[in-house]
Amino acid sequence: MKLIIFDLDGTLINTLDDLAESCNHTLKIHNFPTHPTADYKMFVGNGIRTLIERALPMASRDNETIDKLKADFTTYYNLHAKDITQPYENIVPLLNALKNKGFKISVASNKYHAAVLDLVDYYFPAIQFDLVLGHRDDHPAKPDPDIVFDTLRTLNTSKENCYYVGDSSVDMRTAKYAGVIAVGATWGFRTEAELRENGADHIIHNPLDLLDII
Image (tube, rainbow, N blue to C red; front, side):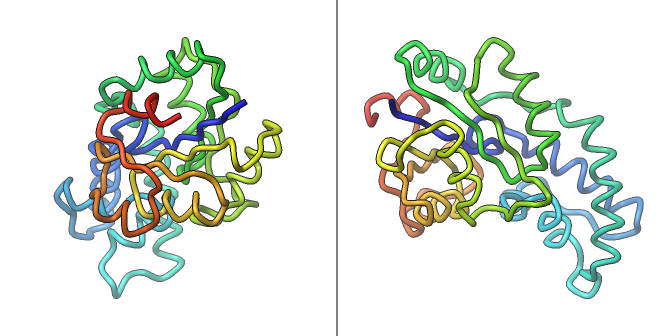
């Protein structure tokens, strides 16, 4: 049986505005300059710690400062993660179609695990994912393929029957390192050129295009 693994941010749900607002709030209370929302398209993708690091001025990217801002960001984001965030158009019909056809579906994200569980439960209450994984402290972040290997083992699926759908170079490299089929989604945070340059086997411009590929 085929398995489709989805990235979360920029693939299933558009979290950019809430991530930007939460990070800018955190920067502001610590007297650091903030950034336009569009800049966060290049800041996100590698987990919250890296998001904070990229948002800080170069001279302030020490571990103590990053840790302090990460804690404040997490507290604020937990309260505001659903202020603006919504699923992308046609994502829910796609997920329903995949389940109706008998495919396994899962989520593999660099966002911290508790937030991933919360967001998936909130935005997709009627959809039964076979597995949902966010970043866990005892596991490496993507593009390390650990999270994909973990998913394949848990769901007893071969690499040959697995598609990984994501919107960034991190996702495409994760798929390539894991030896699964990489599908680049152009509606997310990064460009089609980035997806192709990092090994996308397929490019889709609408979520429902995935049905034609699998």
